[in-house]
Image 1 (cartoon, rainbow, N blue to C red):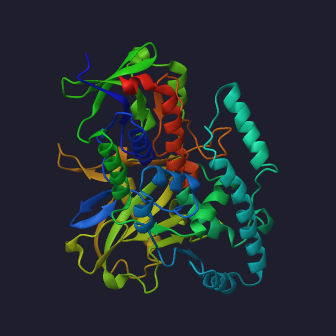
Image 2 (image 1 turned 180 degrees about the vertical axis):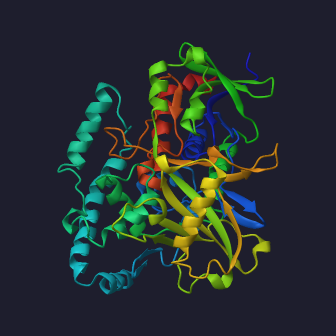
Image 3 (image 1 turned 90 degrees about the horizontal axis):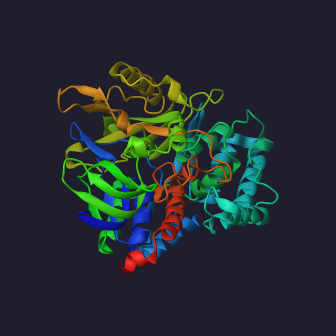
Length: 494
């Protein structure tokens, strides 16, 4: 017999699953969130606050799914005051150009005229196309359609929605500028770090939607993603749910194609459930299903999900005088616009992205992230050192005196092995960018919520990842709807 029973067990602490858990708990479902060994985004290295991966918070004013989630959870007032827009929103650094994306339209237009001269009218045409197309995409997202649809009725409703809202189809708003226009990297650089899907070729839907959010600002949340996650965990607990950070799952117990029990590792404890939500690395999650119960074709599809790139982050603590005057908190740096936007040819530089500690004094932490093509990655210390050397060389073109003022440095991929007390590369912190989106998903997600198992759903960072931060909220609403269909009201009453 089970030691405890929950309507929904959520494995992992990625954002979309925590949002779904908070919404389910608010609706009366008994929810358990299991940490399963996942770590916070912030970590301390030599007394400095470093981050494992970047987060770009946007869409608080422009996303109906984001607004709906906060409204349903009674968080509208808190989340109206908590996010603070950066000023400038961000900067783009190209060879011979530095463009501030500012809140005031007049200032932004002045920046464009200074850097792009006679091309401003064509660039304004790009923004007009973005505004027009975004209105139609927004109408689709407000319906919270399940993507991809399954079965006759869902497919028919999806096709009808697409015909009504997206006819004529969404087109590339950059197409009129030509393939080598100097404005292209200005748009595509922040898109590369906002979308969690393949960038080549980029999706016009992703570009339109993300350009809309970015045009209204990147926002600061004190404590970053860890604070935001804690807000949703607290909502789970306030509505009679549970959060157990320290425990890990050993395996699932299956009956008739369903997960009926969750077996806790290193404990004599079994938890019964009506539904399970994957909110972690999808491959490691489905390895928890005993081999004899695995759906071979589905598992083969999971293992064929291969990343095109990985997000690689390294952190540099520098003395205050190293940071140039006027440098933004988010800088997208493209050294050579004629080359592919990857590896050391596209950097996201964030200043003090993690919560500062008193020991940091007058120093700053520069978190530098690159999109490394997957086939180039080698999980060795020698490879990490070589990548860090390339990144710091490119960083020096934006922060000229970084070498002279460097105080500490640490790669998010390197950790201390507790057994051997030596530094090793930790593959569990790799952040993969998965390949092409699925059909009938607006080109915004490489995985679907549904699985081959009757009561198992997928959330996590890859669900709706083509829409970046907004995608976590849209994915959570999909999970909420499907879980409501899976778990009967009898379970709740019983």
